[in-house]
Image (cartoon, protein in one colour):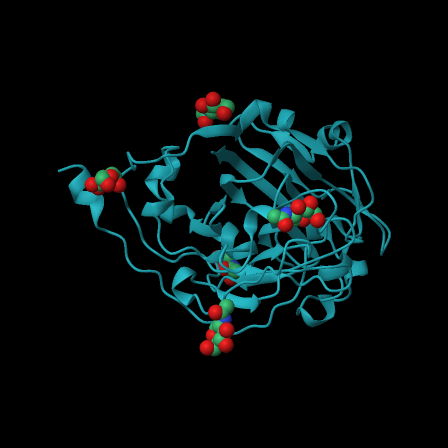
Length: 346
Ligand SMILES: *[C@@H]1O[C@H](CO)[C@@H](O)[C@H](O)[C@H]1NC(C)=O
Ligand SMILES: *[C@@H]1O[C@H](CO)[C@@H](O)[C@H](O)[C@H]1NC(C)=O
Ligand SMILES: *[C@@H]1O[C@H](CO)[C@@H](O)[C@H](O)[C@H]1NC(C)=O
Ligand SMILES: *[C@@H]1O[C@H](CO)[C@@H](O)[C@H](O)[C@H]1NC(C)=O
Ligand SMILES: *[C@@H]1O[C@H](CO)[C@@H](O)[C@H](O)[C@H]1NC(C)=O
């Protein structure tokens, strides 16, 4: 009665087609990039897998959350209207908080009035540990959403773009679709996304050349047709999980809206072989993953305006100008990441 009754209830994902152009970028030292993806729109109720071969290596959650992260306090490499503040300042200003329910909230100042075109305090954190492979599960209750806002959950290594950049969640303004993107260097052969491998992913391809440089940093990525994959649409369904599997065979990314999170993820015994088709996938057949992506710090940040959200603002349907928007704290009440946990399995 138990496992059997819930075993075969996985509907196939709907492969919606959005046909939008790509644009954007997440810059590490000097650059930006973009990407989108769709959530895997399957309805799945599977029993917790007993076949997980992954072991929990790091769990970032609750009262110890910030012990595993550094607060970046340099000027925003993407030229946003933000001042990234220290841990001490973020905590005293309520911009980095662990709540009694174990959720961690980081975000943008929504109390102060700043000059038009000025900087608003925000938070950018990177993991103290670095990773060159793994299975990463990020459960977010909400993400920053709204006009002028550019949130990202991503990772990168030293000497951008030589050790690569992996963008799991990224988008701008009132965008409805998440972008998934890789950026690579040029030292170890070409790195491309094989857009012919359509059975391997559910999102729409934005760009196929992963190699990036200052001035040419779109990368190779996807736009997720699922409107619960990003921004207000993500928040409307109480968020969900982003999972990515990074190994010698490639990189795969999944989005699960809250009601569709596989039970093996909730049980902390993740078994990606039991999950539906990923939203995004890059294969080692067209990109030597381990030689292009290594030593990554995980990063969560929110910037405002800047190289992507600011440049695209006028065509976004958002009111006024981005520099006017930054002045009013009311525009930032939803500019917050609510992190349930981030788990890394090896
Ligand atoms: C575990 O693996 C065995 C053997 O491959 C398979 O028969 C079984 O269905 C799997 N169980 C789950 C829960 O995936
Ligand atoms: C809170 O997080 C800690 C650290 O991961 C964990 O041990 C504990 O079970 C969590 N508590 C709840 C209520 O989720
Ligand atoms: C990849 O590039 C780095 C940096 O140029 C180099 O040290 C390394 O040997 C290369 N690896 C392979 C497999 O070509
Ligand atoms: C994808 O298909 C096109 C058209 O058949 C072909 O020219 C191209 O080489 C294929 N790309 C890859 C990476 O296989
Ligand atoms: C989110 O929910 C609100 C309130 O129901 C609705 O007005 C809005 O259109 C939704 N936004 C998205 C992107 O789903």
